[in-house]
Image (cartoon, rainbow, N blue to C red; front, side):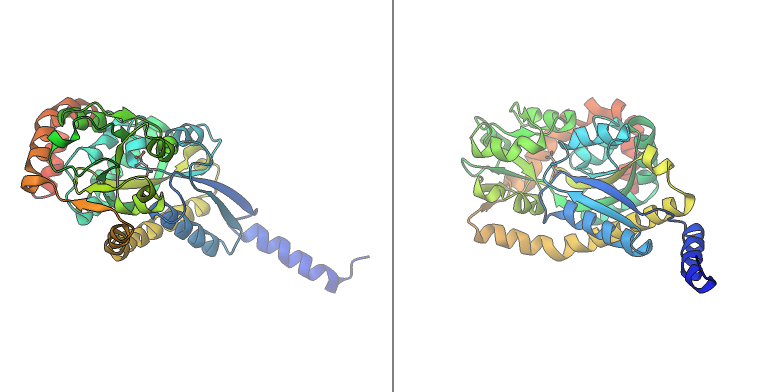
Length: 331
Ligand code: MLT
């Protein structure tokens, strides 16, 4: 028989559970496209740590790096239908599902980390978050800032678009990026991110582009030698949550998820500033050879802004959308 004193801890535990906004212990799953150690991983681990802390350990998130839960584009589909809770992936792999997000990958629009922050965290970012929710059924709740995508290849230094001739370059299945390489005079090879290391290793493709931090985390330096500092896209990597999973949470839990997402985003911005230079140096020490584009990158810039921008006005919401964005950036 229960005595009053034996019952007390039980009653207290029940009333605590009932008054807690996080009634049941939860285990979420998060897909991460890159290997552990990059900016996606940093954002994911920070978010997880914050969420656990804010829910007194009642919520846990298990991280699955290196595309273990499918390639980046598949994780958007899986989250949309509620099969996956969270995913962190590159923005260029969200664009096929929500074309207006392509604004953030229009070549040479974002020219610094501060501009990337301004666009993702201001009104423009909010509109893109709303559009992604409407188009893709996933909610962007945080951002990893990964730095500019640079071109790497295994064959030779590349200074001008002319030097690309004869190189097979891998790109994601992303129309803006495919068109950019076409404007530079080559036909790139679309390939899923999860297949890229093997593609480079086996020589199916000679090169690719991604930020220093991603090149480092993915160990591309083992299969690539030459780096060209083109700065055509600033790599942004959203943390998404399945909207159907989000809607199953209590209002308190939703607010906690959003808060942890914002704090993890702030952390990611600081992390990039602290690590990017060091990682570039490490890549140099590991034998990578760095080249700056000839003529201040002018030729690269002119070719894509004239040929690629107009092709995508309609998909990003009209020429006015790009004009407004450039104005906001002071150009
Ligand atoms: C890609 O090139 O597909 C992505 O940028 C990869 C990534 O998520 O880092």
